[in-house]
Image 1 (cartoon, one colour):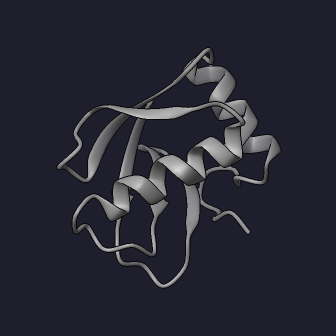
Image 2: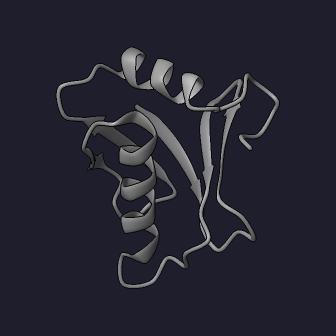
Length: 90
């Protein structure tokens, strides 16, 4: 799943955009802190272990979920409160 990460944000949020998923993280991109927060939050929201498949040092990442397809992970995000395109999660 392609995810655009915005580190050092004021609040954590997951936003659906026409270009894909955008995740705002409170952590700074230092010493892997933003990546750790991203994986922790995506795992919490989807209920499946998340890992970065590509782009560990980039804002554009490929994230995979153990035992879960991208479509199933996206559906779980929607159920958990990720908003429809153009809206931010609560």
